[in-house]
Amino acid sequence: MVFNDLDARSARERIDMAQIYETWLETETQRRHSFTGFLDWEERNGRQYLYSRKKGVVKSLGPRSPETERIRDAFHGGRAKNADRLARLGEEMNRQAAILRTLGLGRLPVPAARILRAIRLSAPAAAIRVVGTNALYAYEAMAGVMFNAASTATGDIDLLVDDRNRLKILTEDRQHRGFTGLIHREVDKSFQPRGPRDFRLVNDAGYMVEFIRPEPRPSHRAMPGEGPLVEGDIEPVPINSLQWLINAPPIETVVIDERGFPAPMRAADPRFWAAHKLWLAERPDRDPQKKIRDRQQARIVLDLVSEKLPQLSLDEEFARMLPGALRPLIEAALGGKSAQVTGKPDW
Image 1: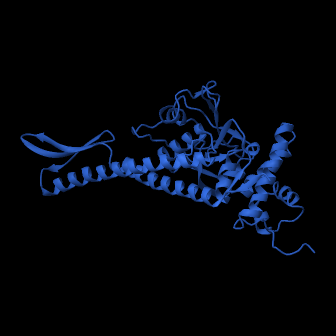
Image 2: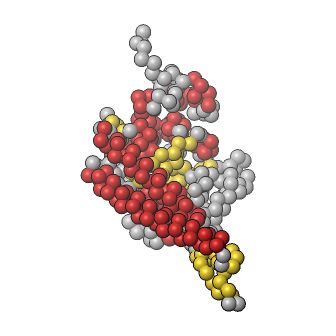
Image 3: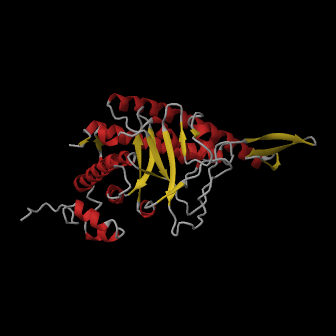
């Protein structure tokens, strides 16, 4: 068996951590939006005025009065409550992470988790998807199972960037940064590109993050998000066939990293992911060892969908959603049938 069901306690503890993290994320987002900067009295010509200093913008909210006093009190009171809530949620996450470590539920490599958390906070609207082997962590979280270590072993993470729109990353210091600047500031300063105009960052431990994008059609077509976000940043490399994964329905879930902490993950619908893996395994230029793993991973995800995710049907309607190049591969993998298991004998 390549995946095992979580026991009742493990499933509950993982769900609890996801709920704590989502509450923390809402609270941290509120802090960044509403409670940063400076708001206090400043004296001008012998009178006190309420001044706001935020994002490099200085603004007077008017002379001291009952109304401006209420504004100031609301800001400082709200900020104090927000800070207290963040502190309590942080302590709760620390306790919950220790429980998850004890239960052996740590999964995603720590560098990957930190990168995903940083992107979620600094570019919440970014439609960046995890592809490749790490997407298995999202699928096992959806289904309440754990894949075996051989299925999920990898030394990098592939991030698929939707280049149809120009992406903006705004860090807490309100500076526009690229992927390199964000990862340096929030994750690990040892992440460096291997050369100019590279699409990969590698840290001192050898962990690699690759930024990729779909190859446009036609290949010379200019896309709004194809270039670096800032000068000197990495440049996502165009790769054939990734359009299928960009257009596939997305799934979003919370996964657990190796230290027991949560990380948000967006990936393609697992059925499309499996179909894409089957397509890769048929490519003549694909490394033979990778072909073997592609087929194995596609098979275990299709088995997972059939056994644990009945809401994702493998029927004819789904087959019609697939590009023509993928449809026969899925049908062959399902034994020539594109029907979900019905529970009836195979007369």
